[in-house]
Length: 244
Length: 277
Ligand SMILES: Nc1ncnc2c1ncn2[C@@H]1O[C@H](COP(=O)(O)OP(=O)(O)O)[C@@H](O)[C@H]1O
Ligand SMILES: [Mg+2]
Figure (cartoon, rainbow over the protein chains, first blue to last red):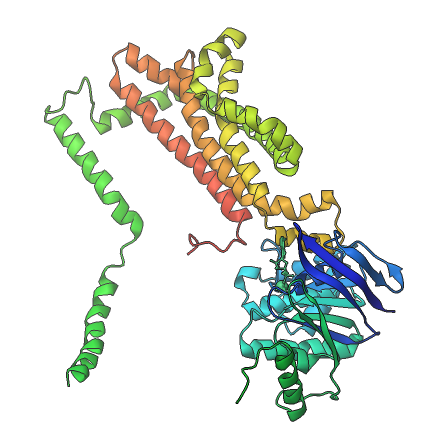
């Protein structure tokens, strides 16, 4: 039960986006991929997801090379990407197959989990950004993926909604022990959520550092230890202005 | 000091405005019908006072009477029926062909490269230029008329189907791919519903053109139909018949468009549009 990325590189029209990325995950781990904009985080995640297959290197799922989309993987995008012509419950059950009433029952369970019971028959146009992203989370969870890939899932939300959904993600993780691969450019988000951080840097993006976040959960967003980690990361990314 | 005065003035102004707004809530349909009613009254008056030459422009009441007489002797229904029949068949044929070809061109790059240039070339021919050829080929019976209408309907529907498919959000397709949908399922579950709005827009403008072409088709030789009434009115020096027929065209055109609009609103209730109030 593991996801392994081995020497993955990707080139767009003769320009390298990522180079030689290797890492592996353990079961039930939350891995953060952190880096500044444009360093290839999305590119890497798309390669892992199988949405993009024109990369070099390998992605191994449970020990086997996997170069296509797989039902063991769930993907949550930066934008909710709901089908505007489907109601909330139909959106959640989008990835399910089988009898309609069973799909609906299953979808209703996950809607309840993300706190949207009662919004089943709403349409996406009636939802706020945070609600829409909750629906997207439910849609990704309903197929019970073993691995959850998230590409800056909360970056388009306001600070309060963001914190709520981060906690929701942790609840889900606790309940299902899903292995989570979270792409983010938000250092605080990464520190609050992740067991381990892979810091990408440069263009093409390469792994600059792997960082174990040694802080038990539940974490406090303001903890001194996390602040120290943050300082360290900002230094690594050369984002702090030196104090003289 | 000046600042204070300004901030005091603000609430006063809003107080003044509030009651004014309430008075102006007249239904828009009433506002919209003021001018037409006025024009009709003036027209009627000028005709009655014999200021307008009635052998060229008869009074509105005369026109209404003409329609009532046609309805009373039963011939009106035959004319309306045959015209509706022609536009219905032509519209179905044109829209269906456009849907098939448009989907094909939208889905397959290769089909686009193959078909699009020739379709664009045909599009640049003013459709009425086909009339003599269609008559040569198919005579002046129903076939040439229906074909002409179908040609008119075809292009707007085709263009909208193609652009609708090409502009489907790639991000939504990716969601489908993430769930391992096959190409067929992607078409059925994402591409078709996503391009439905554009298709319906195409249908409505196609229908508009269809009405234009049914007039042309019936002008070129028919023994029945609203367009035939136009010709008959011209040949018998009866402007009231011509105008009656024009009015009927307008009413029917509007009615069929309203029908499509209703279907559109029903099937696109999920859209987040400015228009919806
Ligand atoms: N479809 C594409 N075609 C060409 N270049 C691309 C494409 N997608 C991404 N890139 C390039 O690859 C690099 C990494 O992009 P991306 O993975 O989106 O970065 P991030 O998600 O970290 O912001 C960028 O320099 C970007 O310009
Ligand atoms: Mg990105």
